[in-house]
Length: 240
Image 1 (cartoon, rainbow, N blue to C red):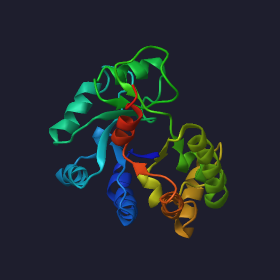
Image 2 (cartoon, one colour):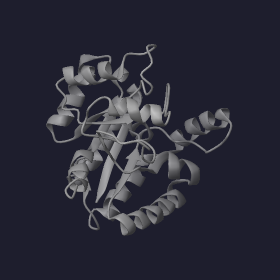
Image 3 (cartoon, rainbow, N blue to C red):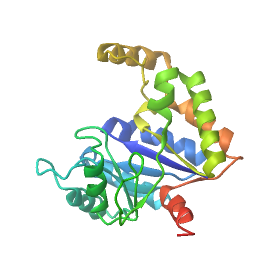
């Protein structure tokens, strides 16, 4: 079983990338979990689109910006309330790596305080939580395609994924919708190189996620079952 996760970090990903991703999943009859930041939906139409996706079977989760519960940003509970006020059934939370980012135990405790069904971070917390902790994901775009290109990156990804599935019987996979319409660029320590190659590679349709993700769903649709995070969580909790 593979839990599918998509993090929507910006308006570009929401309005341009996500619809393309959704069309691919619809082709396979697959539903996934989409984690959204609360500050990327300025228009009523943005909120309506996300609600429509939930109504069609996709799960919507909170992609938490305030990962340390600082007073400099809206509180984590305010972020959760924002999504629920749209009418969304929020059951899970993940930390956004931008803005504040991942801060280990502080972020675990911040997410745990929301009282949701599950959360996912990196590894497992070293304290007892009230919230179920999902297994750490493989990041298909940044972890493989950006570093190694579409062909080699996908090959290395499937090798790692197969090992995890053989060992545990389940895995979680993350991608970001913005990279379905914009190139990941060339992996470099220099931001100028990354920015420049993103522009060039986008024009050349290189290091985009659409074909890679479509290939991934094609290759594994017969091997295993794709599911939303909430459904994978329920499966993993069956013996607890």
